[in-house]
Image (cartoon, rainbow, N blue to C red; front, top):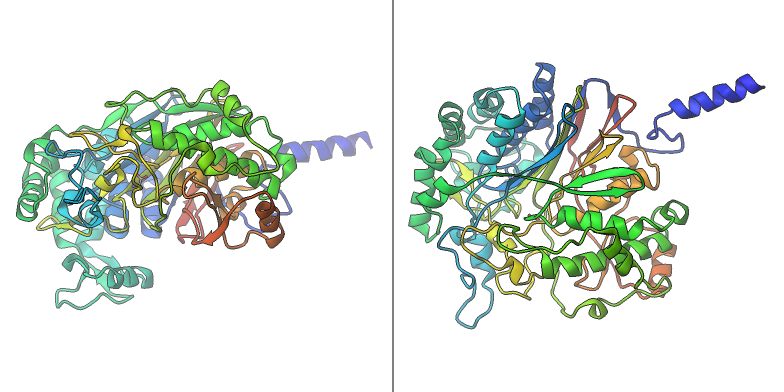
Length: 554
Ligand code: GLY
């Protein structure tokens, strides 16, 4: 009897935390490495690099360049982003900040019309909307500091895809047709639309990538590509100059660090607001028994919503580029306790009671996140973007790539919401050479000093809450990774004062939440959390069904 009890105990202990027998969805498993992205060809490229002996950073950089070819809605060389890297050797987590910067000629009121109102067309769909691109510098810096392969080696798959082409999927064909007007680089040479099954060849982009492979990032920031960017700007009233490009620098920053129920949470520091608010919300929630109150129960959602509102209210006031503004410490447990003390457990606090304002919402589907872990335990969590899907829709002629419209992430007029309905204060006002505030939240959770969960998401303002929920689903609700990623999501961003939920939250729960004063709206799915979990030397990968990516391991 005693032996049987011991055997059962042994089985329970050795069962991965991620393999609860009641679950419907399962992540894929592997022993040597894992890559998860929102685009299958890019995932395969990452895996090929790992199989050839490259480390997670090599694979991540190759994926980043490949997605600039195969996933033009968000993969890019004309945008920017953030990468978190956990080095298994040093145990450290660092971030590469390759966020775009405002051109030197940018100024606070550049998007206001004569009546003093924000001109969204200018801030989103003109050449003025583009910040100085950071992706090429960021990926190259990550590779130089932490990779093992050369820039030419990690660019080779992307060059081949651009030069020889790849098969257009039904989804990509639909996206191109919906762009109106569709940039000519996404039309066939005869001017017709690409149909599913056609081969998309990107000759100019191939030439650009080859220049970078041959000459390094100088080609992009000082050479032939820089010249084409400046020419494009001069022809269409844009501001990015030769000097802006020559001065652009990707920066290594310390990540935001917090703890949650014994796990170490590392996420992106300012100029992203993501890490600060993930840690701030986890701090507010840590002393509640979330596991017992249950996943997506009315009680749990109520408490989470109260935390979300307070974090997003702080975001609007305090967050901006740390090289320009001083950001108070919002991640202390003491501050979280003060905020938590204000929660009323039976009644939703109205957003007006937290701070005033009534901005509108906006739906957008941009940005992309991917995760990579190698056999040695090195982990990369990368989120990069053009801001909107296909960015500003403006292409650098002769260079074959899209420009971002990241300038819209500044507060064009403090107090007036940006495209995600997010209000910003003067901390995020436009200033020359400043980085615009972001929500991108690439995150790495460590357990006993080792990479445990690598996650993040696209989704504008919903990135932060999506990432929070994946973390809580794994840690609090002990879900396996695929269930954690698939689970129905909620979101509140302080203003507008509405609790946004995905279709699938049950009606009883919604009734209970309404009774506590929450205004519930059901909207489009949120995020695409390409995630990896490592437990007992097994890698678990989960692509997010919301965007149909691919997890591959070997
Ligand atoms: N452009 C979206 C973000 O950076 O959060």
